[in-house]
Image (cartoon, rainbow, N blue to C red; front, side, top):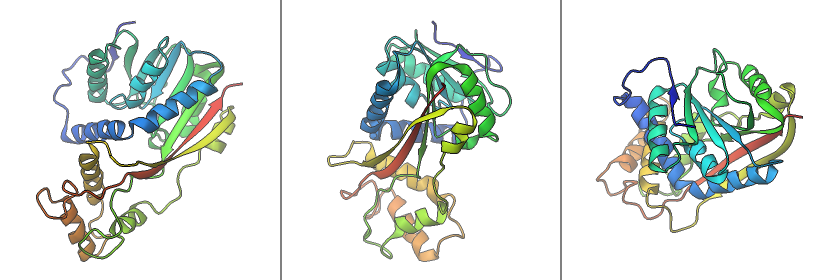
Length: 281
């Protein structure tokens, strides 16, 4: 199979907008820093699968973190990456080519809020941090059920929130800044897809939380990953945190400041991601 992109037009997608470029960097940094977790997750799905997959679908593929990890783990499988962004699919295709996977990776443009794309029947469907973006997750899950062969596996993954990187005392402002940022922006409990999966006809095989607390030495990209994540959180905090907290966060995000996240030797990477593995009976 050739690496192709099925998309609304053949326009040039090299000039991605600023928001797409920023999101692509975040996704790529996430994949680099959390590489060990991703490998563990994909290996676990291999253990749950009833046979070696021939075809895998990645719903909401982004720049291809899951797509490429699945293609490398399941070497017999063709992988179809489905995404709403032609720019993301363009980046994914470039990565697949660079890794020598272009013969097994295909990108398909689709708006899952509208119509399910025409795809081969899948042995494994992967949906990582994508279902909460669609208007009607139940309809998407029902379509995924129809696209799976009997005995096929669906893996839905959600993160609890952005990782935590900072110590309680960052050397400026009040203690506990990052905890207050997270409490402000993420007050609700994490998504739980168990009932949605059951209603769509799946049998829930397993639910597994992956508690991530990376040991030192951290991956080289950690500081930039922390900066990008915290900058994204900062963009939603105007009027929601007191001025002293915003000033402390500005000090952490200052490229050249003494408290800059890029200069720190006390960073951590702590987060939880949960995967629901469900089978079509």
